Every structure is written in structure tokens, then in C-alpha cells.
Amino acid sequence: MQCGSIVPLRRNGAIQVRLQRRAAGGRVDPQPRGVPATMEASNSLKVLAIEDDAELRRALGDALSSPTTEFRGCGTVRQALRMLADWAPEVLLLDVTLPDGSAFDVLEAVRRREPMPLVVAISGTATPPDAFRLAECGVRAYLQKPFGLDDIRDAIRKARQQAPDLTPLLRGTVGRRPLRDVESDVRDRLVREALARSGGNRSAAARLLRISRQHLQNILRRKPK
Image 1 (tube, rainbow, N blue to C red):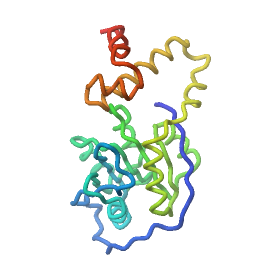
Image 2 (image 1 turned 90 degrees about the vertical axis):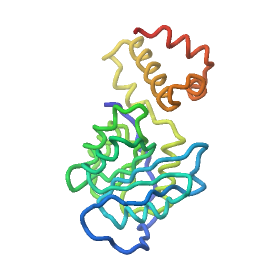
Image 3 (image 1 turned 30 degrees about the vertical axis):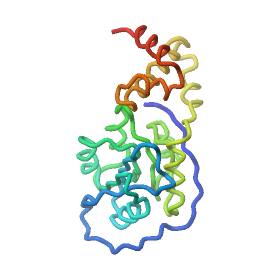
Image 4 (image 1 turned 120 degrees about the vertical axis):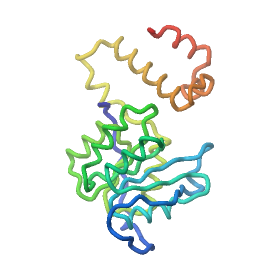
């Protein structure tokens, strides 16, 4: 598993829920929603909230709604895995404790995806060891309940705009792997992720990597078949 950093975010009061409570059962929210105009990027954003509290899940969808961004919600690990089988969100809002498992069950399923979704974990019960393990699984931000709607917007924005802290991962490799192997693995992973995010378009991938297309071509030619 890859190490990452968890972004500490302020608590801003309890989330305000204005919607009526739905019947229990953790049913998937039927209507796609989105994120506010301040969150929009050049491309549409897909957000999946995996949260067993139906009222909170609906409130998140209501708060992050926009015509250009798709929001879906579900309440269990099983529902999440079923949705993820044929849908690729860019952002996961992931409750740590779920009725039929935990966030780690979902993370195990998504961490090998290319590209891997950006994950914001939310919980009212996670312990410090849980937070450390979430970081190891690639979680980019962690919010403690109760939180404000501005906090969730900030968490998504930071997860999308800020690069993760690589220091814990790199420090953990010292004395365990040759420098040349680490350099090669980092380069290969960056190239694969950029190609996945760009749908295989090499010019777009080169722009993500901030290198020339020719440089990217040279890297790909040197890779073993």
C-alpha cells in the first residue's frame, strides 16, 4: 500500500440537514447530483458518497449539487462495490464505519484503479491508528464528524489541488530498496496515472506531467514490454 498524508481540517459546527429522513435500509440515492460552481473544473466531476446515514448522504448531495457534476450516494460496502464496478468517480466521500464492513474494504477495491479516486474519509469514531492506516491506503483528507458543509468543500478542493506528501513513503524506502529502483517505480507510476487520467492521450498525459510529448514518448519506448 502507498503512504500518503492526511490533511487536518477544522471543524465548523454540525452539518445542517434540511431534508426529511428517509426510510431505513441504506438504499442508493436515486438522483445524480453535483458540486457547486466554485468547485467546478474544466471537466465534469463525479463524486460518490459512501455514508450509511441516509439523511447526511442526502444533505451532502443537496449541498454539492450542480448541473455539471454527477453525485451518487450509497450506504453500504456492497452497494459501493456494485456501483464502482461500472462507474468511475473522481472523488469518494467515504465513511470509515459502514453496516457491512469499513472504509478499508472499499479502499482495497479501489487502490489498484488507474486512476485511483481521490478519497476524503469521514468519521466520528476513527482512532489515531485508523487515521494512520487511512493515510497508508491513499486517503487524501480526513474529516471528523460533526463537520460543516464548508469543510467538505474545502476537503474536496484540497484533495484535487494539492499533491500528497511523499515524505513518509520515501523515508520508509531508505535502506530497503535501491535508489534507482525507487526512481524507476515513481516515474512509471506517474506515467501510468497520467495516461489513465487522460484516457490514453499522450499529449494530455505529457501536460499533466509537465514534460514534452517527445520526452514522454522516450520514457515509454524505454519501458520493458
